[in-house]
Image (cartoon, rainbow, N blue to C red; front, top):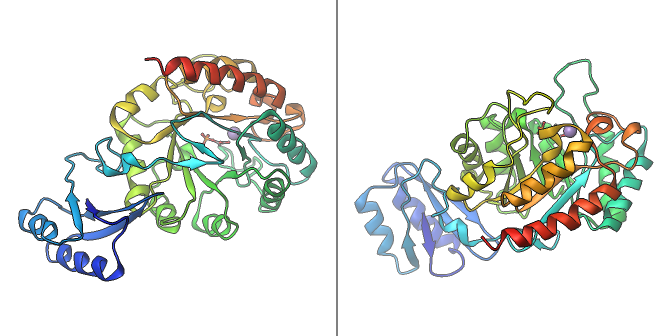
Length: 344
Ligand code: PEP
Ligand code: MN
């Protein structure tokens, strides 16, 4: 990984380093951070002659070689110094709260607008809303592009940035065209490597964040970080990891709650971790406890399915959405726990 003296390389300098690494079968992936850019050397970056030639360039400050399967996501990576700021919240400096419907009902836009207004009032930072849904059964509601207009209208009305899931290249194209602020990769697509790469490439060098959910059958830590590495290696380091419960489920909960993985992830990566307790426990009355537990385990934020009238929702909302009023209480208590957790 090349760290330049200046915040970034000039186009001529980039050309020169590209030519050097190409001689050794490698190529350069610029990674544009908030304050400075770094340049990942993809391929076998251990050639001594290559490293020495790069270090001989007066505009190269350092060459960091990290012996890790996920060298960009690794805690020792130079990316660790760049902090992600979303909706005015710098991750790691204050907790981030993302909330909204599991699924936006295109037939009931007002429900989403009401939820959005109530969430803004309650102090949530970002709106979530499913436009296209990954459903287990092909006969269940699959989503509708019309719901994107509702999400965008809610952003305009509230001024809050928005998050939605994409599952294919066409959906990705549409959300990028509309500058959706955070793109979600759901549990089912968390190991869809071509999609991860496409999302990283399509958002490289932008402020767009990527919320990567943990797969339901993912092994602890390494497989999750390797998936995130695909996005970073394609050029976007604005990644938030989102544990959301795994299989097999704990009897009574929708999935096996995995809020405790945050501590293990933080040993290995610099990435922010925002936990989704809604899909983990899967019932609204279990969600507050799981949110607070997530904060106690050191989460940087929460992603919580929230609906003004859960009973009128579609998708997961009737069973697992909390109301904005409950979310308001959760956020207040989560902030307290977030502060307490910092003492350790
Ligand atoms: C969701 O966020 O509504 C969703 C479907 O999430 P997951 O991919 O975690 O199941
Ligand atoms: Mn859902």
